[in-house]
Image (cartoon, rainbow, N blue to C red; front, top):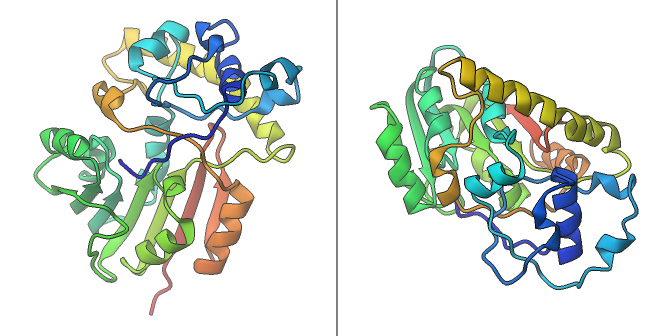
Length: 286
């Protein structure tokens, strides 16, 4: 996906978020002047739990850090893919007997491949040529992968039984994106998106603490299960290093809920544990 923005986090911010991800990891030096390629957003919860002064004292210049699978594993051998974990939420939203589904920002096609088992036809679009090439290699015949920008590409009106999006919505102008995507949903169909919120402290403190304290336990369990079974258990995809990744969500869950209520009356937005929110809206029947 190419709907990504360069992060504006300072070196102090980055060092603090690196500390929250793994207090013992070597990235605390927060090197600068390298291409930025974030993997996941671990918001700044521990500001309330640690002395933030030393971190804030870091030089306030834009920070660029390259995050690859090898680097993640070297820092945290129990890291796991939160996006893969939340695919199941979106799959549950697909109506039974769905004829046509849209996957917005399909990446390497893992969600589209799973959607193909729940729908007769899946349209998967992404603005990254490299990701579309990877998606075409793994998706089945009933998935059509197309290189396109969802905000510019012509989309059919009221054609889809479900329009799904995984970690894309926070990179788009939210109001315009919701208006555009909602028009493609047929009456009775569903629009559902999992995306990243800006941390809203102290409101988000309980869920942030739960995420920080539980993700390592889940990672250990998933690593063990991978060794005992043939399943992936939320392992990062091989193409993960090639995916454009940059974080800096601007809207909190409450702000997303406010925008969605304005554009899509009856929509629901709820915060998920691992630094995501779920937005869902069903288009009224005629």
